[in-house]
Length: 310
Ligand SMILES: Nc1nc2c(c(=O)[nH]1)N[C@H]1C(S)=C(S)[C@@H](COP(=O)(O)O)O[C@H]1N2
Ligand SMILES: [Mo]
Image 1 (spheres, rainbow, N blue to C red):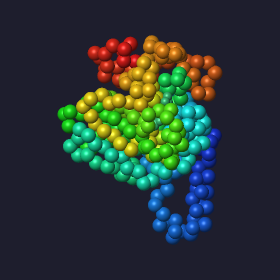
Image 2: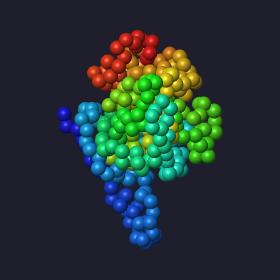
Image 3: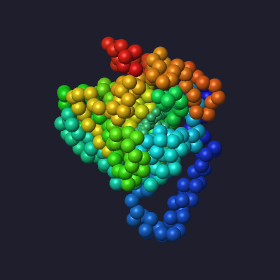
Image 4: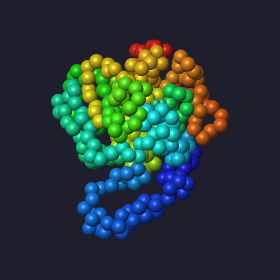
């Protein structure tokens, strides 16, 4: 099947790349070339990421248009409505940014975002994203396996789980001024899930720097789990021995399991998970076990009762 390259979609249907060059030309004219050269590299949504490799990870499904991927979001730090993140996340300061990687590791380290960007080759991966709310998208993410980062800190034998923590800063994140969730947002994975090659440390989408509303400057993407497992705007990664408390599981343990593997056979207590509304499509489609990634990840759950650990 012929897949339209996301870069084609991006440039022909959405924002022409000329616009970015115009932006830079505008800066050059107003600041002068010398002043521009003195500025740190600009990292803003819409700027192209260099050196991205195509990867084997893709799906036949048509990528969801950039416009929808960046305006229909869940990011409660910026409000609970789908359009809130696009409206309010623009002011999030994504430089400087560090991620502390600590806990059960031999080499705890605080990584600067610039070093993370250079840590491993950037790959494009077109993944399905299935929200627990029963809608879905297809997103061409840019990043590299989280395992690359975790290997660098040398996990100890006690590292059984990984905890991710999102930035907490109510001055920049207006949604944190309400107690809709217990901030900061925390999520977690079992160590083997975190090390799985599908688990992506993500810095971009559609070939460009990750827009703030999608979790800039760095987020996790775990394609076989419901979207809430994929924490955005991460500032800390902690390797731990015990299964970590997570924000959604704390808020409603009966509705948001720690494992939260996409499973059409197990309904959410308040709605069916059998089908999903693909953003941009009219008819619902059947949802797939493990969001279509069963072949790769089902073996991780060999001994588990998947009805219980939905
Ligand atoms: N910090 C943080 N991370 C988050 C969320 C959130 O509210 N806060 N929402 C989650 C949910 S429910 C989904 S479906 C995805 C949505 O990612 P997207 O907006 O890039 O599609 O982000 C997840 N990560
Ligand atoms: Mo979600």
